[in-house]
Image (cartoon, rainbow, N blue to C red; front, side, top):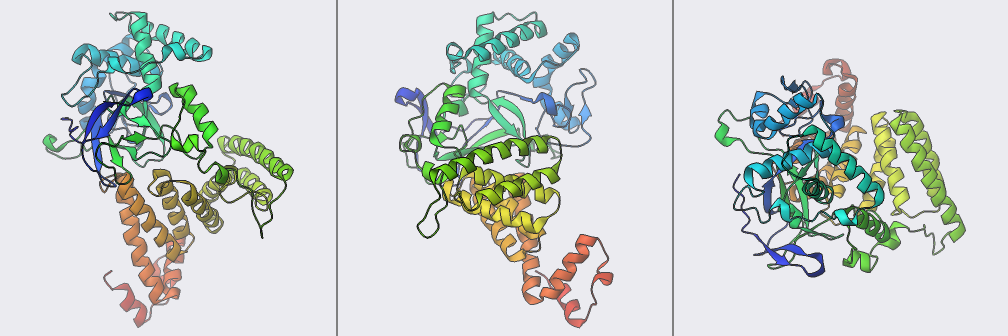
Length: 488
């Protein structure tokens, strides 16, 4: 893939080291640059459920007949990935098992460096070797894990020409610079990859760009039209010429001290962005509820916060065990305690709303799920950037939940709002955006039916839910016949 990096240039970002800045004005939703992975692997736990080429979550994947580890959508994906998998395939056969994802990714990186010397195209702005590893800054436990990974790597690749120090350097680079890859619906993290140009984009807690994975297209009969999986760096709002490009390494939905702690541990730097320095929105994230100018006591707020943390731990345990009725019970109990005490933007309250809505949707209690999902979006809108992908996804889920609950007007409005956000964050060709476009058209059609005859709409919906023939569900008079034959 030819890398078009005309929109950006490398510059000295002071204490942050190197950075990328724009060479021209950019607009919301514009792709700043796209970049295929230098190397990428599927997570160990999903190795049989996710295609090792396009990283799509699929059923009935085809297994590599040689190593019996790699899985692919079809022969096309397998052929497209053979260059990456060839040496890995032989190594797994000889080792008689696949090592963990850290070792597999490091091996792929080293094999590619050996083949392409770390620069794979004219558009690559830095070699892999030049990326920071922060091995010297690792904590004792992380360093212990690193030594184990290095030994496993040497067992996996016994004929490597690289020494332990260089192998350690590569492992460190991956730990600091690896980018998590999601499936085609953006619902699950499925792997990790290394993207050298993306590694040059520095962090800001309130960034001007977002990163998404485009899974590429291998379905065209003519291979000339095939495209590789790649990340896309997309502008969240207007970015002026010479402005630094930034992304969020951690979710903004944490207070500044927690974000700084996470960034220090994972990436080894002290975040001094405006959001952290001025503790922006921290007050909202830990807000107590105010009623007629009165707030609950600090002691009561502390008590409810501690109760919420205990509940969140119990909820996670019940969810892991697959006991969603217990999840709902715990969420309801916690939300009842939170309601008179915590503000509607308090992080613990939002986390409980999110979990409750997901569990209730799973159990098909859509009306209650819709209420919680709507409240969650209201809170998110006060905290997130208006074009934040998390906000867009939450709004989409809320819209779908309202739709399933029969609340077609609110559902359609939310789906439209989500579509507008994801057009910026994901673009028109992403699978999620295409799904949303289909939902937007469907809910628009249903809304027109609802506005013309509510009885017909609810009867049709009930029939669909019960999987009945329409003739059994409703008595069809001339008006209904005319309505059902309209073109929307």
